[in-house]
Image (tube, rainbow, N blue to C red):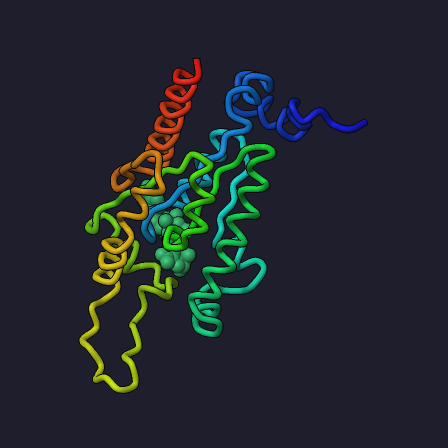
Amino acid sequence: MTPDPSEPSPAEASHCATSHCATPRDAWDGHARSVICLIGPMASGKSTLGRAVARELGVPFADTDALVVAQHGPIADLFAERGEAEFRRLETEALRTALAAASVHGGVIATGGGAVVVPENRELLSGVFTAYLTISRDAVAPRILRDRHRPLLGPRPAPDDEPPAPDAGPLERWAQILAEREPLYREAAQTVVDVGTGPVATNAARILSAYRRHTQATEEQQK
Ligand SMILES: Nc1ncnc2c1ncn2[C@@H]1O[C@H](COP(=O)(O)OP(=O)(O)O)[C@@H](O)[C@H]1O
Ligand SMILES: O=C(O)C1=C[C@@H](OP(=O)(O)O)[C@@H](O)[C@H](O)C1
Ligand SMILES: [Mg+2]
């Protein structure tokens, strides 16, 4: 028998029966088709918080970076061997895939910090609830200095015909990149959530509250 798409799958029903969800039906009506996309600068917590929000909602989590890595290998290698433009193309493909899956059963999607620079991605994001996660430079500093896997925060090679410029350092580069992208984040987001303080659970709850406020406001408008 073809499953009724309006009903929770056995997996969803069993999740809801064993977790915080009141009943499978409530969970399905309340959240199961929820789609939340997270955008924001590198190391703001999109991947970590996206996973936590998805778990809370009982919907699948997708990370566009992880999708790219699973299919094409490490991001640092892609940047070095195939260039940023090719990485952006693969990122758009991953975003499309993640959105298509989430549109069926709901889902939370963490994008990479640079997803908003591609107009096609901004167009894709405009169809779903998108939250811009903000964090101060001071709060992000220990993360940036600890995690050294992001190619855009590594030393920039000077062009062949120029003397090497003094290295600005990863935190300075993070701030420069954020300044360039900030208007794009704001344009693409329905809401801005500051996630610079507090533990993961607190920040996940902030994102969920923003999502619920948005959903309620949208429902009020439609009445
Ligand atoms: N609320 C938080 N408190 C402390 N550390 C966090 C928090 N959220 C994320 N982190 C840590 O910050 C780092 C970057 O988080 P990540 O989710 O990879 O960010 P992004 O996906 O935005 O680049 C990770 O080491 C993660 O464990
Ligand atoms: O800001 C960017 O351009 C990038 C952010 C990274 O993702 P996170 O924001 O999850 O670190 C990753 O997509 C890649 O290194 C490029
Ligand atoms: Mg990430």
